[in-house]
Length: 361
Image (cartoon, rainbow, N blue to C red):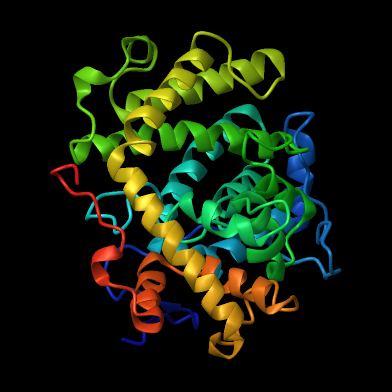
């Protein structure tokens, strides 16, 4: 269908039903920048023009610089490939999280906190959507696989900002939030980046437990009472508790953090997940298989650089063949990497990582 023309020369999508009208005036970039100046919290990050980018650009007429960053990340191939990358379980089953759904859940938690505390929602969302784009296939095990090939090792947060997303020419504030979202690194320099750091931990603790419970790795009665008493036993109650705790702390103290007993409950939550999920025999076996495959693929492509396709979105194709190989393999989805191991390396299928289903294996 080509749509329905009106006598005024407008084409409508629907031929029947109501004809909604707004009469609203244009709210362009400059109008929203002005509104940010009036309504955001004093310490919130304001958008300005085209933003602070490595390569100068003209401002967008409609979008703020951080809205533009969010859109670039959302439409990037690095973000789309997260749909095929491990969150916790390789070869995720129907309802298990992927790295993409994790990023979306982090964005939901982070923007809920940012909106309630007067922070810049667009910047927060951009950082949250992009925060894990540096992850390789197979989850955190990919960091163990790539680290021996790089001075200083491989960290997905740094790789995401400096390699996987560098071609997008994102704002300095967005890249900083992505680069420093991990608690093992120094703090981001914006409050929005610090909110994403907390949202990441809140989201993965809650949804990783839910996925592990679904496949029988943990049972509800094993969940620590000290966490359940504070945050409840369901994902929704846990996220509601932690979001409220962050909002209360930020609005009452100005610090991006949590007070007790909520911070202690989140720490105990993460410790339980590490013991029962991330360090479980099934997860460790997955990780060992991932490390072996990815390491072998990096070595193969470093020795055979002609087998790597040209990828304009790769971010760093100017280095040595080894650096190019790491960039290429890090960008692969799980299935592409494991298929490449079988087809190019003659990897025995029984040596591939196994998915974890409702039997727990």
